[in-house]
Image 1 (cartoon, rainbow, N blue to C red):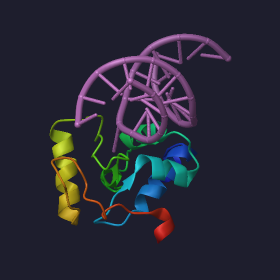
Image 2 (image 1 turned 90 degrees about the vertical axis):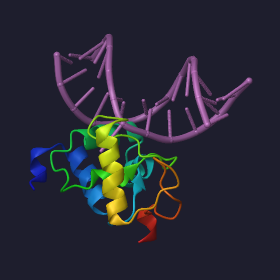
Image 3 (image 1 turned 45 degrees about the horizontal axis):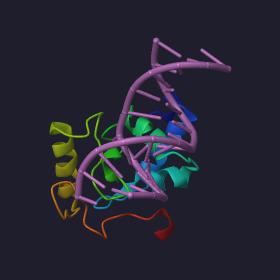
Image 4 (image 1 turned 135 degrees about the horizontal axis):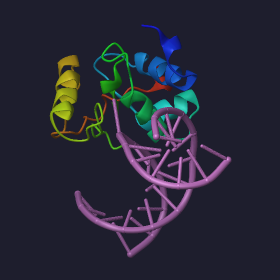
Length: 111
DNA sequence: GACATGACCCGCG
DNA sequence: CCGCGGGCCATGT
């Protein structure tokens, strides 16, 4: 784990991911806001190129509507199925096939 | 620096 | 709920 091998922007993104506890998830927007980025899409890009996966829990980041979003470049398919499996394995609950149950979303300002 | 792309978000109908 | 258009920032060419 050597964060110096990535841009300072990604360092913030990955650091923010590590702040998310197992069994909970955060959103691209919240993560972006937490590191001072106005674009959640940029955050998504940083996660996509995340060289520290799964050491960096990029799977604990979902969209604002609490759907999974994407995983390793895929918005649907095996990788997404795996993302869902990882979250469920950590104790995250689902309201549907790709929707996180309310209450499993981590808040940076909440602890 | 300019152009194109992306694991996104918001407003409108 | 679904589709459409605009905005946002970082990355690669």
